[in-house]
Amino acid sequence: MSLDRNTLITEVAKRWGIILKEDDPIIAVIALNDLVLEQHTLRLEAAYKALENHLEKVNKTYVDQSRVIAKTVVGDALVHATREIRREADQATQVIGHANSQQIEGISLGLKEREVLKQSATIAWTVAGISSLGLVGALFWFT
Image (tube, rainbow, N blue to C red; front, side, top):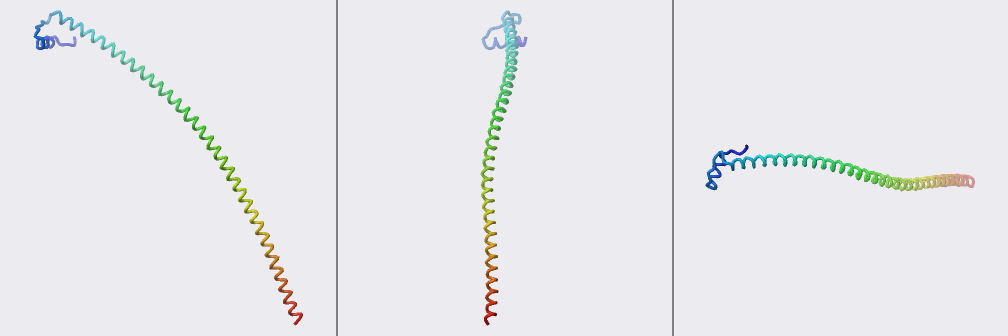
């Protein structure tokens, strides 16, 4: 018995003034009560441990399910974001390609105009040179 008989007898005498003997039947009842409490305590501890194990399993199941759900949600979001990024990149590529085409076209026109101006300047200098020679020749001829 986990309860000390002498301590019980002393406490009962102190608190209530009742004198008990070591072989008093109430001591047997207290001992029996102590045994019953010990048995119930053991059952409660076992039930608590079983409940604790069950809750750990349930918690692990929920954590695992949450991970699967999170991976699915994040994966779906990632797929959607990737599609959107690709769509935006394709649009940007088209816009940039169109702008580049316009710039190339503008540069090409500018080069053509430059070539035309260059040819015009060459013709103008040639005409000016021939005219100058003609004037010089006319001055010598008429002088």
